[in-house]
Length: 176
Image (cartoon, rainbow, N blue to C red; front, top):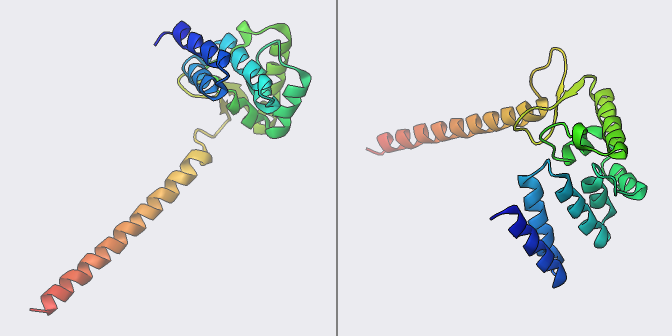
């Protein structure tokens, strides 16, 4: 379905007072078009309308219309800069498309992330959020740690299955 068609449905939903379907449609559009600042502004406006300053701050962070109270609510809800940057769901660096105030906010956030991570922040294609480049570290324990736990768990289950199979074969052979 074309972007304009979905936006027309969002407008129709809002005219009828159906906020939830409108919010779902906007969320889908922002996921499909993460670089579209107008969609982010519309999502922020809808969150502002329903009284959700945290989400209004999140989706309005890259716009000029966001209020200081909304940005503060967003920052309080997600105190770590890296978490806030990830929550923006960016696929590339939006700096060239931002207004003056939004560009300042975004630059400040990047500086905070770099200070937290101890490395430069770089945009990586096809990733939902920018990655942190750090000297000597090419992987993330946040990804590798759970993976290793799953591997250990799977090997444990496999070991139990083998022990059970051996016991079953011994019982079958012993019953003959």
